[in-house]
Length: 275
Image (cartoon, rainbow, N blue to C red; front, side, top):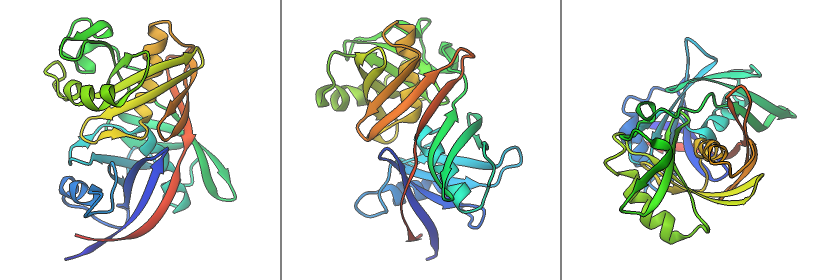
């Protein structure tokens, strides 16, 4: 057996295990993600994130869900990648450019006494075209799924999201309906499911059932998608606070069509893991 060095980090409770691939080589990340994410026999996390060298940006991020599937992007995870990279000297750039499977993201770091306390991410433009999300529907902005009797607005922020607005959040909605929608035949690559309760024009509450991980305490791309969906449905303003189970993200859908997400990144502990 061999061992790897890792760091446990979270963005509002959306927790991942981070590995410095500038110094270590991970040959089977899918299998490692399943093993290390187990909350009884592993470190325990929503997945695995590898911080790698990049030929086109300052660092490269690869993220794997708890079931071993590779994701395109993770909004909470990328904030932690910036903190991880800056505080370990992998990149001292600010703004920092991070390569992801959904393109290069630009991150502005708030730094105090050499510690990254908050990160603002340019998440890029939302994708609303059904083929780009993807969803097998000609009208992804008004999608009804009979099995759950809800209407969904579908948005991709690097990851695909189905957003529904409900009068009140509950376990019955999230835990019972989320798995059905995630794996519905309308979504060929599965989908993240967001349940939104509008408080007022500047504040919403969100619970999210993530593909490959189940319900998580926070989802950055989901928070961005929920604001886009809310604006499209004239329910909220373009700048809005999104309250998740793990805390609050500030989201702005700017006039240039880019979505900006601001939130914290937190290191929990470092350790070694036998593989």
